[in-house]
Image (cartoon, rainbow, N blue to C red; front, top):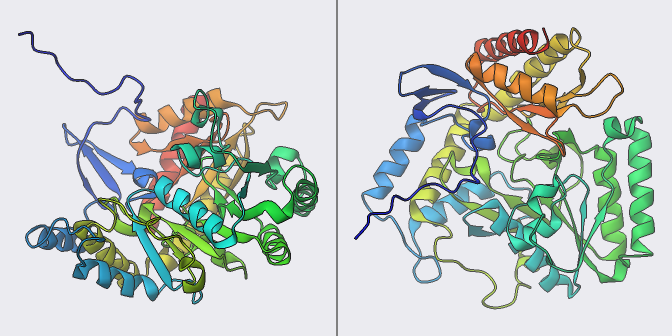
Length: 421
C-alpha cells in the first residue's frame, strides 16, 4: 500500500518567512536561534507576550487536573474563576457572559442573540469591517473581497453602511462622520428599514480594514440611532479588547456602552477562547439550546485567560499600552515625514497602521509589501491589512517596553530606506 504524505493546504500562506521554534516576551526565535522582534503578536493574540511565566504556570497546572470539562454537561472552577475576573473589567451593564472558541463564533453568537432578543432579522455592518470567515461572520465582513469570494449566497439580512474612513475619502473626520451617519439614516428608510434591524455591529478600530479608529462621534451617532429605533449595538472587540488600544476595551475611548460585546484574541494569551457579554435581561432572551458547543469554555483556556487578566492588572499593561502606543505612533510619524509614500500613520494604543499611497494618492500595496518584506529581513515581524493590502500594521504584545519600541521604529526606518532607495 502506497504511503501518502499529508501536507498543509497550499492556500495557507505565511506572512513572514520565519519558522519559529520558541517565543519569549516580544521575541520569536527560529531554528538557528535568530531573534525577531514580533510586532504581530499572533495578530494581537499574545497580549502578555510569548509564554508569559504566569500564564504558562496556570495552563500547566490545569492540564494536570482537568483538561476538558464540557460546560453544558458539568461545571468546572476555571470557568467560574474566569467569569468572576472578567466581571471586574466588563462595563457594568454587561453582566452576563457566554464562552466559545473563536472570534467568528462569538460574532455569530452575538448576531443570534440580537435576533432572538429583538425578534428582527436585519443586521447592519460597516464598510471595511472584519468579523470573521465563517458563513455568518463573512456576510458581515467587507475588509477585503477574499473573505467573501466564492462563498455565496451568504447569510441573508445583512446590509452594509459606509464607515467614516476620513483618509480614504480625503475629508476631515467630522465630514466623514457626517457623511456616514447621513447615509446610514438613508439606508434605514430605504433598503434596510429600521423596524427590521436587530443590530448594528462595528469595530472600535477597523482591524483588517486598515487600522482606522472609529471616531467617537460616529459611535455616539450609532448609539443614538440604536436607542431611537430599538436596535442593539454590538461592539466587536475581538482585536481591540483587553488593553490593546490603551483602554481595557476599545469603545471606552468614547462615552458609549454597547448592548453586546464580542471578546476573543488577547483574552487568553494564545489559548483559543472567545466570549460575548451582554446585560442579563438581553442574554436571557436567547432561545433555549442556542448557546453551547463542545469545546467552549475549555478548562485550560479558562485558566490561561484568568492568568492573563491577572497579569494585565498586576503589570499595568493597559497603561503601558497607552504610553508605549503614544511613543510608537509619534516615532512612526517622524519616520513617515521622510517618506511621502506613507500617506497616513494612525492608531490607538498598540494598534498602529502605516498607509502607503502613490503620488496620486491611490493605494500602493506594492510599496507596502516591499517595506513589510524588508522589515522581516531585518528582524522585525509585521503584517499588512487594508482592502488592497496597502497598510502595514504594528501590534506589539502589551508587555513591550520603551527600548523595544525604539528598536522597532529604528528597524522600520531602515527597512523603509532599503525598500524605497
